[in-house]
Image (tube, rainbow, N blue to C red):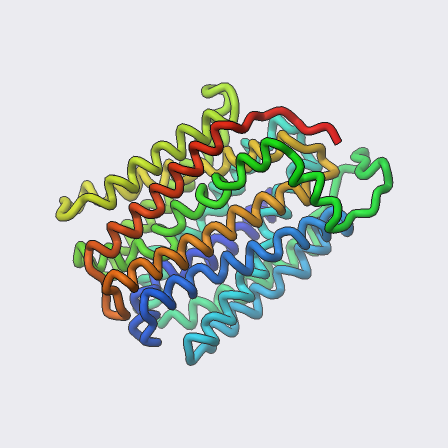
Length: 397
């Protein structure tokens, strides 16, 4: 668990690191909001694309080997990002980071299913998300402060070193499964064709829109547009922006821990997801209509949004109750494909909205952010309506 948390900490840091740095990167490389949305989202596109082959590889070769090899791409991506002298080299670095980090969460979730009972999955997944969320915290005020003192490039050199250490821990510490666990009793060949079993699951299809929007609705704020919004609309400096985003990340960590345990109160994971998604929708609507607001209320709003944004841990838990352990790599990786693919499209599309509404490398008007946040809220609401048709009945293959 400690090793898995360490890996997810690195993943969280790298995926959210451009959020607090986005005003600096836009200025240093003359990046407009359209390209900034692409730079923020391409990590998640790379992350998502590799999910399905990663799931097949994990089921076939085991998490330890696959996780150890794949994370080396994050080391390379961090180095390229630190050496970047143009927007396109930044883009290449982010693509490699996304590919390298694509294995950290999904591999961890598969290992949990192999080492524990199904009813413990939500709690342990919540712990990994919460503890690993320290990486998200480091990517807010600490990263902002460190970058002011030493420059953002050194941050990514250090990230490369830490990621390399995690790779060594993966290889030397992790074990693929308990000795008494038997997988693939039918000795079927594990291939892309097996994904048809996953996609035929009735509930899975109703959950796909929620997967596209659950995590992306929060990351669009924390991982990309929160800092520019706070700068352009509320005039906050880099330290104040970092502080608000850090509090939002802390709230997300707490929420991950809490939402991992709410099934006992709400009766099932579906009700937990409905509760969390409803909260995010309301908060995004509020964020899209406010103009001037006292700083303390701004802190509170972002904190509550971070807390409710953690409901995605319950959605992941909903997925794992639908399938047997031998299918878990393919099931969770397919779910994660939609989870993180959604982040790419949401960040890319909101970047286009802000750009078309008059945003450039120096900033954007309030109407641009309002429309972008309202766009995310409406998409999440539509996803929630579709999700209502799902249940938690396991598919028999």
